[in-house]
Length: 328
Image (cartoon, rainbow, N blue to C red; front, side, top):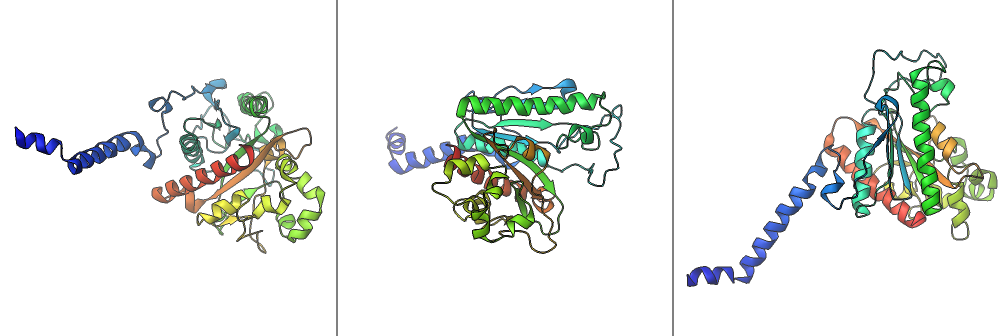
């Protein structure tokens, strides 16, 4: 009996057992972060929000309580045969999915929620494959036939977008929309779009800062208007410690624009921001929600799961930093 009492009073043993217990608790709570399984927030603090679905469950909206909206237009997994494929032959029409962007977007929202201790971004997801619908296009290009089921789904998706934006405006005054995409460009850069072309980004820093038409035509016009007393516009585009691209580049991911890659070079392809970022971003004077398109290269989306997980962690940290710095 005396020997047992001595052991249980041994400070080193008690410390060791406590560390083991804490490790087991941590693994049981957070071990699932290493796969693509969405987090169930009710296991933490009861902040999980039930999703709201549109017609036929083809679009999904999860309300949030941060000034951040994450939208995923091209990650749908459903290809119902009763819905005809889009047949438009417009040269810019794309019908292939941005693979893994739904999984990335969901986990991105989950990790941001953990960083903000249960406060979550708004999440909007299109579940139909891109061959059936493109919600990142005007409705006449994104659906086949104005009276089709996909026209209803298109409207559901954009009604969810408008609902989230109005909620952010009412609750926070200003906020940020992040539109998640994937690209197959050979440079494998993470491309961040502010609705500014490669030609504009290739201008000198002084030219960008001196021309008010550039910042007023960007999808982060409202942000610059609020911060213009302390920052130049180019700082928000590619400053090392002041831009989203600079923060992500500092994690080791080649990002354009950033302080390392201020603009695409020569014939390098670059997506500057599509319909949703153009429609909902603050480039329109009456709008106060900023919008940024994030294009993720194939090398970070497909194949190596650990590589994808590491990138999601870095992206979640970068967006959380950006949100705290400019929308806190």
